Image (cartoon, rainbow, N blue to C red; front, top):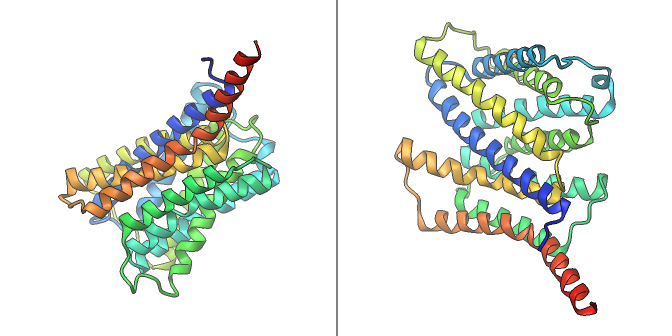
Length: 304
């Protein structure tokens, strides 16, 4: 049975999203290790500056433009502002509120993106896909299992950060494809660097010279960030946003695996159930279109 073009795009976009989430999960563990030696603001600045240099270097080698007049369009402005907003507020939430609360709120990003795709891009989101996205969100709630006092007034910081990241993902889709990944990467990582400076200024944390091991972790973080950033930009430009976005939940799965294997964390039975729901929701979201295609193929066979 032939596979339609949209199915191919959805599978490719989903694969790239999983790659992005895997690299981001490993990058998170790198940041966690380095944060014991360096302020978070400095880490974000160095990672952002290093990523911007990497994308600039690749653009020069491949003879791709780094700056473009498209950068002065509204979608690009919105994307940069969204990136900056997401980094500043979410990083602040991690510093000022419980990690469980902030993580749970961040996982609501796909819901906002799906709603945005339906409203802004007029994508059709069927009932089964909505149910799958909500199922994934339930899985996240089960894994995080926040304490009763997890939410506070400061939780608004995580909400603003989540909205910022959702806006960035939607803007990546709205930005003209003539704007290449290198240009997006340079400006995206510069936004991360700016957010690091803002955090350092806000918390009054002076920069310190990293030791050798910290430099190695930072270089690894830049490498992972470059791969992840390229993958997520490509993923949001391929296929349907409503089909690809739920695969963001895979970040929880990678994070749990890293925690168990490298940080000695334990997985509860409820967490395992939550991971299962997340995986299930990610596959269900691709099912409606395939089922409709199968029905059309079956009908055409009967008619013949």
